[in-house]
Image 1 (tube, rainbow over the protein chains, first blue to last red):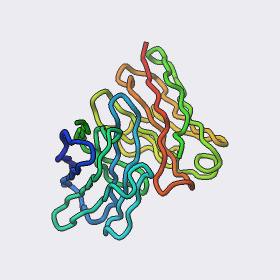
Image 2: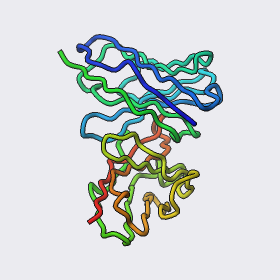
Image 3: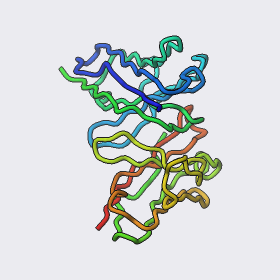
Image 4: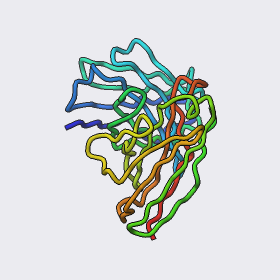
Length: 117
Length: 111
């Protein structure tokens, strides 16, 4: 069955960096675009980044453009989110999700990122 | 890109039908049939319930249906059950952004 497992979350100081990973299994990872979606504590959902199946195209929310980089290693069935110059407003649970077109049909359990000094 | 507008809360009794609305603009819902709905129970990941306005993924109950009129999309839950108590989010393609946009979210309470 489809499984997505995020890791790499934790507490990070403002201005520092963190890299999230998402290990995929149960499907042909290289055939699907992948999403990162985040949810601040007690708040709604926000699309953060999307990467095509072959990694050739990437899209970002305006709030993270220039600071976050999405990438993937299809040989390792793993999706990444490199988060630089982090801000307090980046505090959220980060989910990876499999793309069904622009939709997300399978989601991981999420990993919490807390930006605080 | 501004979030799509949803009511903060909707409630109903078991067995009843409820409708959750999602209002956008001609840059998103009004001009495109790429609307989806997600269900999220507390502490859990979201789950895709409806895509392309009215299509249900395999395994989603037929009690969930979707529709659209003008700039407003709707999620209808019929035969309301206790397990339907959750937060619901709409999402739509938008020409104003390279990524889709979520709605503000609606908390459904089963009385």
